[in-house]
Length: 286
Length: 320
Image (cartoon, chains in turn yellow, orange):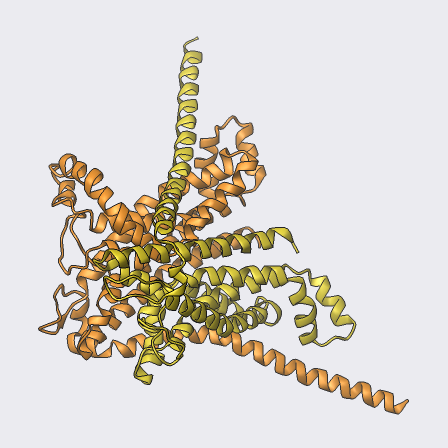
């Protein structure tokens, strides 16, 4: 009888511990989501207040004047496109090397290891590297240097997804194509890339989302420009650095523009990320 | 007949040549990845050589930072980086564990996808947005509601109290650490979630059959089985927190003072570089900032390499 009572108490204690742990885990999840809602809400509210047609039509103003972010938006678009053009082909090629030639060999293992470190490496360090590589030798900050630093951040994302997506294509596909006498480059380019198309596109989109809000490396490379500039060898305005500069400033007008820029960047990044994920879900498990 | 054979052979030769070129091209692209990391290290060491030559190893342990007198030491930024990252992990690890537990054991099937996607959105938000939100919303919140309470309640404590003294400015290590923590939650929780779901169902079911509760299964079966990978995920989050720049630049206060209190303004390596790069008016100043970058690179490299090795161990155990 006594043993049973003790067993009952133990049972109760275990049930209680379980209920507490489950409740805490649920609270932790709600807590995590709370930050997301808080940050998004603040960005949306402040951003929409500052939104208007001038934002897209006028260049960044001097302190105290009215203006928009047209030059910065144009600059960001150009920098990201250029980074994409530089980084994506190399990334896809390196990913194809890992999946199709390196396989599980030692070189491929080393490259995967290094790539994963690059993937999480601090972007500010990449910025300093490009500063040493391009800005110092060229003697000035330039849009091209900014694009190279963004390309270096985009590269590992594309390498990793391409590698993973190509490895998901069944070996039988490769073997049947090769047994028909097709050369490897044709098999890779025309059959495997087609099979892994959605996955590779997802990787590229996620990489674009990642670099469009990237600020730190641009501080040492593309810098900023108050005016509309299309010169790739000169400093170029871009939304993240403008946000940084304007948000830190004491001027109300600049801070409002910073919020508007924050809204535009956040919406762009969120739309691209969601798009990327839905692309993969639409064609599940290649 | 012979002509046909010749044509076939010519084509085979052409294909072989094209294949060789193709493979070389891919190989070069792969090498470029190695080159990117290697040349980053080399160029930072080269850029920081003047600082290392002038101050020697003392650069790492000196807390002096005097741009006018041209004397630079890295101790304050290194200390700030480590403290904010540790705070971030103290904050992020329990929350991430809770989220992973919720996603694998508690949430009904229809809720898992949306909640996991929402948590991952935290990682998609650019760090500059965290910084702005931190400066304009979270700093006043901490200054008005959290820090006065901490100073009043924890400040008088004997040993721990040192951490919670000062003026509730809102700006400081604690605020920076919390924001970093929020930023790394998605990274840590997604690794935990992923490895929790590869625990063999038979293991968990055997424990349930013995009468274990969900919590006991999580604590005694799931966690021990995934221990190395979970620490890998924690190191991964740590690597992210160490190098994060824009979010902390806004809220740390950028002062080169060494203070025990978490509520005082401080600095971090990344924030110091971002804030002062444009002001660097001498070669030595610039070189010191780049040397700081090298220190950051070395530390994150070690932490991330450890993370990767720990994560690889589980992959090996799972036979993948």
